[in-house]
Length: 298
Image 1: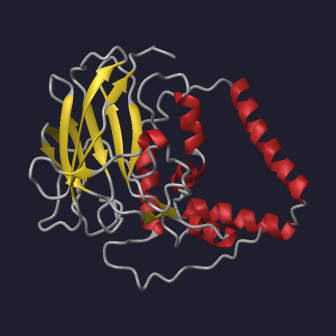
Image 2 (image 1 turned 45 degrees about the horizontal axis):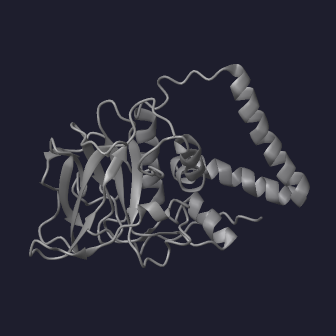
Image 3 (image 1 turned 45 degrees about the vertical axis):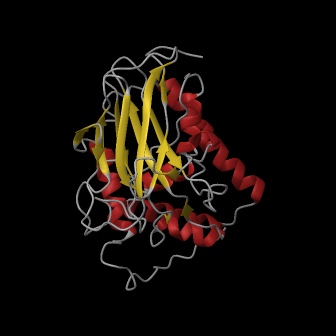
């Protein structure tokens, strides 16, 4: 494998595209501030097991594929660039997280989840159902009404449930990761009703390419891969006493549902858009959530 260390020109970027380095730096900063490492106490035996397995796997690849010094040095330079571009969250969330999510949710009953990805922002504005997320005046795209209901695994309505929603706009850009967008564009935390039902008015997002002008883009170009993610809505649902679920919900007909670069698409996460039944413009989709109680297993 040879990774040529070249920069992709950014002169043709529009004002709100930003660069991979800008987005990567924000993703790295947000992960560092997320608190996800605050309670990690991994025993030395576990660290030795996992680190040893990773090192052995890398050495096995070198031996099996007879890696040259030129390829080794290209890899070393590329790994350094991943760090300087702030793209470790992007790299890990695109190519590794889907397997971590599968392993960690395999014994959880109820609704299926998938990866969170690098563009989650906590503490989005809290709204009561029925809710409308923040949008710009004359927002482009197709209006989308997203609704559903929370129940437990016995079919009982769940009280106190909430839906955190975030997604790209009709051009494929995320607020707080692309400059020039409103801070909380298409981001909200919606409280469901006492009957477990919720309704969110938003816009249908567009498919997009992950940033390609940084280190991850160099890998994609060198390997001859594509950088596309199918259109999706990010969801994080939770309720007191229940196990949270993180999802991405997809739309049928997207050409990259079958070859998503992040390998995050699952049949259970496919939506079924239909014309709105309330007389409004656009589409509506329904997705019901079945949450498992804390400690509940299959």
